Image (cartoon, rainbow, N blue to C red; front, side, top):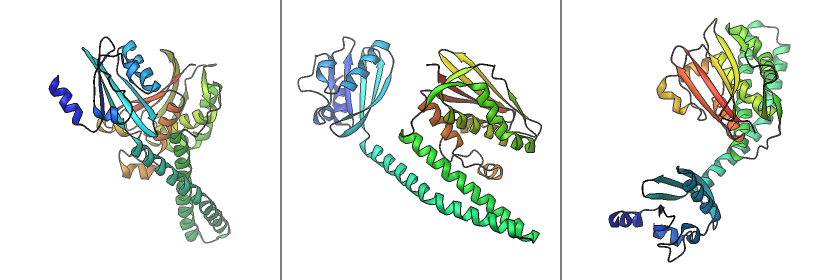
Length: 328
């Protein structure tokens, strides 16, 4: 134990050791210098020694539930991430200063949001000019080039829109308008929007959500979530393939599944597909269109509703994306 304490005293993070009787066994200098831990803490209950109520609450939950706990909190104008490891005779609590990381994240989001806003107007003007030139052009060979230019401008417009949506979701500034939603009707509207795209690719759409299945959430956000999943399922499907949307209740959650019979995702790529701009095969993605932000938007919409998103896939056989949303 003495070697462990000596080691933990030298690291650049905070460490706290709490025994099974809820008493503090050890706290390093990091915690004392940052004012997170009171002097003379050894042998005292943790809730008497810690100077932050959020930390006390998090540790209490970890001890009561008997499982690891993660939480973020602020203290004296600094931001921290706490990870409590529960096991054996001791609970080990690690405190990491994430102030600079959060500052960088905020700066990145602000930069992306500002650039995206500035790009919206010139893109709209450029699109309008190209549409006018296309309509007035009589020569077919020039119309082909204008059509290609219009397609690229539309891709750029979608990218800017997706960046703005994702930035608002990540920052927590996007407020949800919660209401009771008939999920079958929502899926029907998504299918109506994407029907022509599915027909072009020879993909059949099946709405297997039962009549009257209800979820709580923001209609516009959940519409975007389902649209992005179905859109991907169509793009990466095979000719004469299918896309099926199902919904059911499980463990206090409403589960929405979107399954396809497409190309599937290699196992090694599955942990990364919800990251922004991540592409399994860049050449294939460019060929099918898309901004590379759809699944990241899906993930953040699910998180903003207190839910989560999972994926199961087998290369060459298709994929199933599963979104779990709290019933209440």
